[in-house]
Amino acid sequence: MKLHGIFPPLATPFDHHGDLYLPKLRYNVEKWNKTQLAGYVVCGSTGESVLLTCEEKVRVWQTVREAAAPEKILIAGTGMESVRETVQLCNLAAGMGYQAAMVRTPHYYKSQINNGPAQALYYRAVADQSRIPLILYNWPQATGVDIPARTVIELAGHPNIVAVKESSGNIEKTMQMIREAPAGFQVLVGSAPTLWVCLKVGAVGAILAFANAAPYACLSILEAVKTREDQAGLELQQRFAPAAVAVTSKHGIPGLKYAMDVNGYYGGPPRLPLLPVGPEAKLEIEEAFREVKG
Image: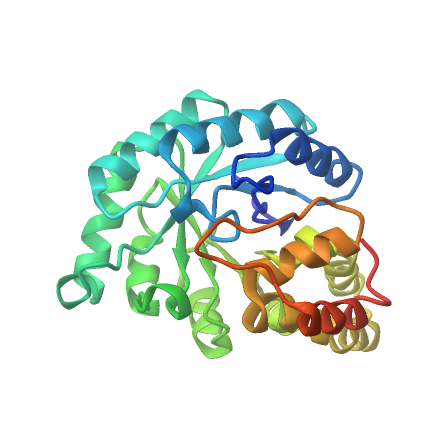
């Protein structure tokens, strides 16, 4: 399957009691439908998936499935620590019409799992049983596990593993995977501040939290790459960098949700134990997004 383009990993709306706020999720998706976003990743890290129950994930998947425009590719975040539960979620999502599963690296038992062979075993076992293709998901800043480039390249030969989302921001590693993976394997990046350079070296697209609040900014950089307007693309990357950093590495999901509120989407509060951003952070985000349209 072709995964070219920009995919936001959708933020999950909650009300001020911490319950799912699904009408607001539908509202956001209907707005994103009007953009050229390639599709949606549902219940990934940005969606606070580790704070959702299985039943809540199903409700979120169903809401997005119903609200998404027909041409949008739907990707379910299904990664869990065990092969068994990950496979169950992959096949549940498949039955709901999702076209691919994004599976994060298992990481809890680091002393046993933080190595290439163990990660490869996990992913092969899931891919062998999943009814939809897998996207490997590497985000070592959150998990403390960094799947080696060589392991990704080896896994790329599995017929049911079609892509990797590389969120480390390591450009050299990204380039190695692009260069050495089998033809047809797709590399997507998950770091908005490195979007321009990664697209230039061969990444086919990106899964970006920043795109929740600023889809047009991300799409404009992608378009500059497609039309080979190098100077324009570089200037756009530099222009949007402060906003991207503010709502990813600096203020995280609470900051992103506030930026969504600022830009006309519903962000709302994060779920405890995450806390909303304070007044100083709000001012910083407002300033960073002054020229970044939603």
